[in-house]
Amino acid sequence: QVQLVESGGDSVTAGGSLRLSCAASAASRYATCMGWFRQAPGKEREAVASIDRADKTTYSESVKGRFTISKEDNKDTLYLQMDSLKPEDTASYYCADGWVCTTSTGIGRWGQGTQVTVSS
Image (cartoon, rainbow, N blue to C red; front, side, top):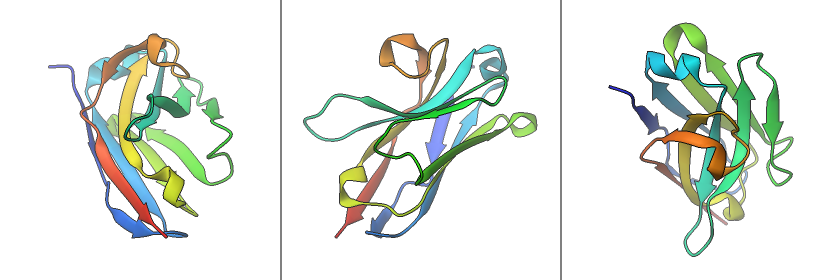
C-alpha cells in the first residue's frame, strides 16, 4: 500500500528545533522528488523544501538557512530538520512525493500531516 506517514510534530518555543520524519513506502523511490509542505489555518498550502533523486534540494525563502531536508533511501525515510523556529512556522506539515515538489500541482501522494506549533 502506498503511503506517507509523518511524525515528529510538537509544540516548541521560538528558537527551538524539531525534526520531522516521513516513513514512505518503496513506491516513493520511483517518484521524481519528495518534499515537505505546510499549511497554516486560513492559508494555502505552501512548499517548504524538496529533494530529488540526485539529492538536489530546494527551499522556500522563508525557511532557507533554518530548515534542512534529507532522506535515507535504504530506510525509505524523509526528514525535515527545523532549527531557529519562529511563531510563523506554526502549521500542519505534510510529506509528499511526485514529479515537481515545489508546487502542490506537481504532487502525486500526500501524507496525513503533523502539527508544529511554535510559541513566542
